[in-house]
Amino acid sequence: MSNPEKNPPELVCEGRDAEPSGGAVVLPYRNVPLGGPRAMPVRRSLPQRDRSLIGAWCFVDHYGPDDVSETGGMKVPGHPHTGLQTVSWLFTGEIEHRDTTGAHAMVRPGQLNIMTAGSGIAHSEYSTAGTTILHGAQLWVALPDAHRFVSPSFQHYEPPAIEVDGARVLVFLGSLFGQTSPVSMYSYLVGAEINLYPYQRLDIDVNPAFEHGFLCDTGTLASGGAVAKPGEIIFHPRGANRLTIEASPSEPTRLLLLGGAPFGEQIVMWWNFIGRSHEEVVRFRQEWQRERDSRGGVQYGTFPDAWPDTLPAPELPTVRLRTRGDP
Picture 1 (cartoon, rainbow, N blue to C red):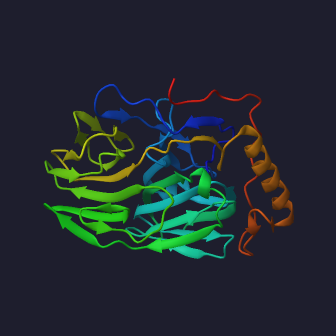
Picture 2 (picture 1 turned 135 degrees about the horizontal axis):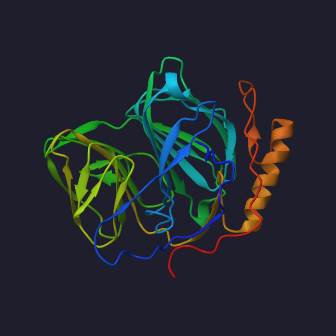
């Protein structure tokens, strides 16, 4: 998914955000229009001023349930990415994905689609004609410096649904509850969908070296004394080897668990690029604009014939933002 903002800020983020002084904290979201004639809204809870990353997870958009007859659904023409992986996870609906590796795939509920941008890739995302309600999450993972120029690629995985103390769980990345995803990653990460009944509590044994975030999707979610509504994340710093979550009393609660080892590197995020300096991001943008004119090139690959158009890059800001993270 693209960052659709016409004037996206330049974000210079440190992998070591300041640790909360206490336990769990709620990370709020801001509303961002995805674009199109009627603009499908998304709730963006990462990055934000007080927290740039959870492990290597650096971007969290939560959207829906969205009536596509009212908003037009997801219509994101070809656009570029560098230095990251996109993780697509749906609850309802279907999205058609195309990219410049030649991958053409459908994103469906309960199925992981992960695209590694590496040195550079371009892709498009459109909700399909048969989709009436669109509901899901789009996540980005920052690639560590040693691997951020890997060749672009695309992976698909359908995790089995397991029952854990009455909860329904799908582990799509890393290891949790005795399940291990076969998807190869470049950082130590975990990702899972968890479904709880009303009032249900679930104890989760976790890696104490990981930071963890619980993205609330439906209902309300409580953990560590914090309570989140849909689109918000309950963040837990490192140190705990067991975390407890509790569903709302009136309805089922669904959430995404996102965790990982602290990233420990400084990154610059702007629009759909992740780099290590302002100058590097400028080069990524210039190359994308050049390759748009020739419908592909060396960095972002050959554009699919099915693309009638692509997204132009916004104008760069005139000033830098200061480093965020540790004071």
